[in-house]
Image (cartoon, rainbow, N blue to C red):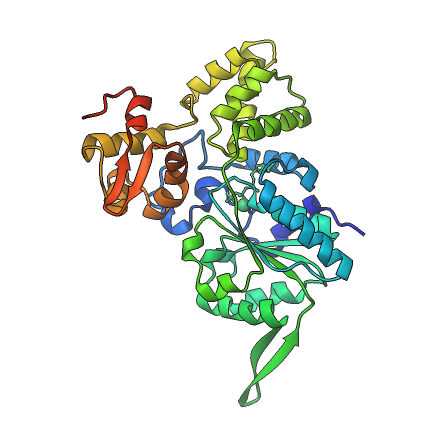
Length: 371
Ligand SMILES: Nc1ncnc2c1ncn2[C@@H]1O[C@H](COP(=O)(O)OP(=O)(O)OP(=O)(O)O)[C@@H](O)[C@H]1O
Ligand SMILES: [Mg+2]
C-alpha cells in the first residue's frame, strides 16, 4: 500500500526535532549554520524561508514524476531504475542529488518513495549528531524505505563511517559495554534506499560519494519549464494568471522553482490588493520591480556581487575569499548559491586567477565596459 509522502514528511518533525516539517533547507537556512553568522538574508529571495513559505512549499510540492517539471535526464534515468527495482522487488540503489537550493532535491526524494510505494524518512546532516542517532533512524526503517538525508556533506566523520556499512552491507556494528568488557554486535538492516542531497557536492568525502549508485546534478530550469510550474501552482492556489504574467515571473525566477512559487505568491497578493486579482504582465512587472528583482531575476545580493567586482576590483580577477570578505558573505555561499546563476547568465567567468565580470554584466548594470 502506498503511504503518503506528505504525511511522512510531516511525521519527520518527530524524528528529528531540530528539523521543521520540510527539511528542504531552502536558501540561506540551508547554506549551513556555520555560514549564518555572516549571511545577510534577502527578504525576498533564495535565502530565508519562514513558516508560511514552508507550508506553501508542501502544498505545491509535486508528488509524482508527471507533475515534476523539467530535469528530464534525471527523471528518465530514475524512472527506469525505479521500474527495474520494482520488477525485481528490490530497493532502489542509493542516489545523490546535488545543485543549488530550491531546484527540487527534497521533492525528488519524496517522489522516489512515492513511486516505489514506500515511506520517506527525512533527516539532515547536522541533525544526526552521533552514530547512535543514525543507528536509531536506520533500525526503524522497513524494506524499501527511503532515508533522505539533506545537507549530507555536513555529517560528522563517525556518523559517516557508520553509514558506510549500512549503505554497502545493510548492517551496522553497534558497540556497547557488557559488564567489564566492550562488546560489538552486528545489527542487520532491511534493504533501504539512501537519498542524499547537498548544495555543496565538493565537500562530500570520496568514500561516501562512491557508495551512491546514482549521482545526479540538478540544473537550473528554463523559462518554459518555470512557466509550466507557475501555471500548475496557480491552479493549485486558485489564482488567475495569463500567459504573459506567468512568463514574466518565470523570467525573474533565477531558474529556480522555489523562487517561481514564492514570487507567484507575492504577485498574487499584489494582484488582489491593487488590481482585480488577475496576474497579467503589467501586474507581474510592477510587483516584481517593487520586490527589487530585476528583469533577469537578479536580486540585490546578485547585483551587489557584480558591482563589487566592477567597482572595488576593477572588474576582476578577484579571488573567491577576497570577494566574499568584501561582500560580507560566506565563501561557500558565494560559490555554491550566488555565483552559479551569475555564471550561467554569462555575467561572471571563473578564471584561474579569480572571478571576472564580463561585458554582459556591465551592460546589464547599465555601465560602460572598459576597453
Ligand atoms: N521539478 C519541479 N517541478 C515542480 N515544482 C518543483 C520542482 N522542483 C521544485 N519544485 C518546487 O520548488 C520547491 C522547492 O523544491 P525543493 O524543496 O525540492 O528544493 P531543494 O533542491 O530540496 O532545495 P534545498 O537545497 O534548499 O533543500 C518545492 O516545494 C516545489 O514546489
Ligand atoms: Mg531540500
